[in-house]
Amino acid sequence: MRFGLTAYGTVYHMGLAGASNRVRITAKDQIDMAEAYGLEGVEIPLDILSQSDPAEVAAYARQKGMFVNVAMGGFEPAALVKALHMAKLAGAITLRTVVGGAKFGGDRRHMAGTWQPFLQQILSSFQEATEVAETLGVNLTVENHQDISSEEILWLCETIGSERFGITLDTGNPLATAEHPADFFRKVAPYVKNAHLKDYKIYRSEDGYRLVRCAVGQGVIDFPGLFQLLSEVNPNVTMSVEHGALEARHVRVLQEDYWTEYPPRTAAQLTRILRFVEDNARAGGDWRTPFERGQSADEIAKYELEEMDIAMGYLTHQMRRFGERKESTLS
Image (cartoon, rainbow, N blue to C red):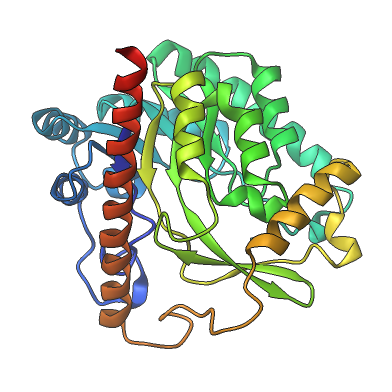
């Protein structure tokens, strides 16, 4: 397992948010930032990579001993194929994409009657693009982006049946499709090629619960359990720190029509997630981030970097402990 840095958890610091009033980072800047944190790679947004010479980015990453992944959105075949070729030039291991459809918080109600045709369209597009991924030797992955459930993401992987197609696992997002994170991790682990390390605090609401970003290790996700699982099932996976969005995600599971277009869930599954929320949720307090409180761009950027420092302290400690346990097992 190797650890890197995405761009989306520090959008104000990196100049990716329009209101940040900062110069937008380059691909090399992101590599330098990852190196400064002692990380081993980067996941570069496609639009940032497009503003550089991909071959120069590949050479710079090699010089620094960094792995490269590339992030995009959408599932139109021609766009995926173009991005796969650029990812290859950048020396990328994986191209990650998201398909959307659902609104954040796993809300599919606006897609009543159209979700299944949407899934079939996604499948067809990924099948076409995966043929190119196989030729280029680049992984193509779909992220569980508060849209696709574990049942559906497994269906995509099993139907496509390619070693070059798999999952970018966002560790916080199973909560947005009302799934127990550990259950989700176990189900998809064999197909995970890349992961986003994201954590959330949970706050109760009248309609369900809110997911509020926090530094990795300060919320509800069992990272030691995840690292142990992947070391056994999929040890070559790349992982990158990606703190959540600056706006809370409201998962309205207590509204009956929330379940529109969802796969059938058993009583046991629902009990697992509702018990998890009950055990971990906070009943009150101000859950808003500096962005939601209307603070300045500089204050938001400072908040992002403070969270990164906390996350890196936690991850460094966890990986040291994990490495010691692994060496003890082997000796």
